[in-house]
Image (tube, rainbow, N blue to C red; front, side):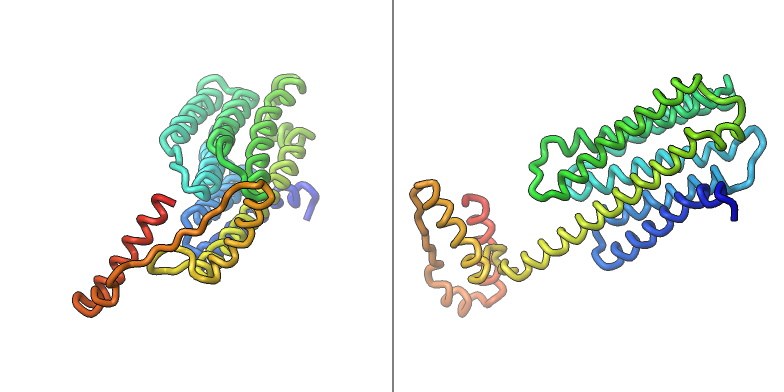
Length: 290
């Protein structure tokens, strides 16, 4: 196997590996954003396979599905990160961006052939999609280090995708043929930089999934399922640090105790199902005003 073949199979291999990994995670958690991550890496693997390994079609038409795959990678990756925070995913704006990028790509493929123009079209489209992540995460409070990492992965992707056209123009505005382009230092750099970004992004998302899993287990241990409030263990765990913060800041602190009058009579008269509903409603009221 030559070095060139190894480079061509690098990104498809990484994409397939992480696509399977995220799919297995999704089977365990069933979180939609994990499924989006699996779709992103599957699209990336398919795009690189079509572009570098698949058979060539007349008029280089195989490059159309390949670049659709690259843009789909960005869309699903944006959906994965934004969806993790429970934010609305801007499907429509990302679809418009992809459509515009592909229109320019088709023009530079079939109308006025230009390898540089095609690279510019897809790179700028992907950069705009990555910017959607940056804009969505900018106002969010970063509770964990991994939240900052995900933000900077998106920001660095914008810089990377924006810098590629600048490098291309600095090299002279393009190449005479795809054979020369794929043998160039520029394309080799793109291959390896994409591999590094894919690995860092995947590891960051997996760490985020692990943190979400830990937080979910902690909620199951510390929360009362019926009322949605802290149970005794959760209250004692949170009360101590809260009291210490008030003492350190010299702030007043108070403990309020509430009781549901004649609750046993409600259970005896109307049944435990009604009593459970009252506890759930009371818990929701406390959460709303606390």
